[in-house]
Length: 302
Image (cartoon, rainbow, N blue to C red; front, side, top):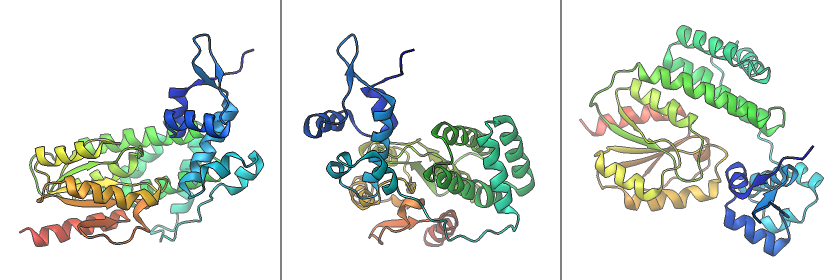
């Protein structure tokens, strides 16, 4: 039986490492070591893809690629970051148990039962509480399980896709039309995580904002053009905790130059928790901060 292999485009998507980087490492460091298919194209075995994925995670944590590539596999695994439990207050005493039960359904690959349980919670809690007390902490819970190695990549994807479906259905029932403020929601290139955007969209819409979702990984120039075309009062970006923190200030500075003078720039999510305050940028580490920011915006824009 032939072992599976992956072409360079698939490896780029899976690891977040560009094709140019993969080729450069091959020349400079002698790794990865792809095979060649019948057309002479690079073909990567699964174990190399797994090592590349781990190297990318460690680079995002601040390690240098040259040193990582030279490090034995068992030592790389020991270096892998493990997130500590977030310092958050659980409002419902039974919430922790509920999160464990929901995660167990994902690990059992029972998508139907997971959706049913989430729909019941949504009906009981209402959309705002559901997002703040269930979806947001469950997303962190899933991330921690993945970092600890107790959740497979395909299981994390199942959670994301099912939760996206549920949130989009809930958002579709909210009032539409022209309201204030008008907010463009998106993320920068290399930030594919969409759940933060959907949670923010739902809460901001509940607060009476008109939300214009552009999806993820929008080029900065296009974000600036969209803000102008939509006459956006606010451009809101989402940065997950997995996004390299060191890149965030530079990206925000670049984008602030591209936005119309009438558009504010907001940045939220776990990725901005430790970002220093910046002139002209509103940092919103939590969803509660985003809700409060809407009230603050209205107070200065009567």
